[in-house]
Length: 438
Image (cartoon, rainbow, N blue to C red; front, side, top):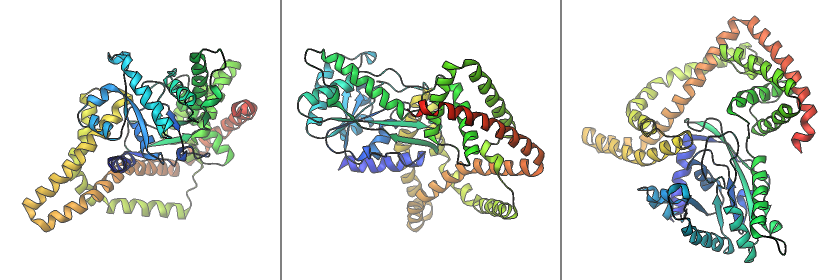
């Protein structure tokens, strides 16, 4: 009962904090039945298990580091969803205590349940996977030895901006790995079998995550992908293409370093010029026909009409908006835990603030207005959050409209440069495609 209730609460909360794209799950891995281990990359603290928690189509048992169980409220929640503690050296714990956790994990798999593990062993903000721990493989192989047919399902989490409200998160589910295929051969050291399975898990996660040599490569990948999409006449922003371009960039850097540096400099230079006028490659293709202009004017008039309601919302919800941000600043949170602090602060603060608004309205204006506040506060809060986030997008649209409407020659010059560069990128992509896809 508590599991389903808390799952519903977290689903509402995370879907307000992030724009969660529909999971890419061609083999229905999230619907897997029987003994399953969900494994994921770990860039964003407790948000990562939270996403698996709300997206999995079945009840999942989580493995979480033991210090989390000592945090007030959070510890009760973890126990309520039947999470299992992991004792780590870096936390000063006695790792011998992990024997009971491993036993419980194997027992869960033998009973046909699902567990979730993040085998990097820590959350981090590096642009590529960290080395994986062998614990996941050891649990899987122990269960296989005891007769369970365990499958391991890789889940890739890619955040556009993991600490910002309403940023997008992409979830991709890879092909299941049959753990029994890695069982040790007669006379083989079981640890070697665990290493082989761990290597296969790492390969599976690389297929569904964006791995870069350095974060400085990310804007290059994004711009190159946008230019490629422009050449193909497709929408930019494909996470799958981002991964393909990242793999292609690694190949080109290794095999043709001079060509790589030349192309990288050209793309970076073009990106800087776009940033100066604050537009994206796909915006270069906009056509400002009368119908387009009319829609632009109408949309912005509607924004003006919604302004008074937004102002009321900002007045009522300024404190719950700024407290999570302030908490993350006061605690000097690392990038990989900042969203965790914001989300869980909001989880505690939101119902308290809702109750205070309702009680305050009852005292000042009577029960009828208190009922209006009780039922009206949640939709008003959601509208205010949406309006606030869309405000920057609306301003960007207006800026792009006036820049290109008044400076058509600038637009044509950038478009011509972008088309030439996209042709070169397309040529490189065609050359590398067979190996990148493989």
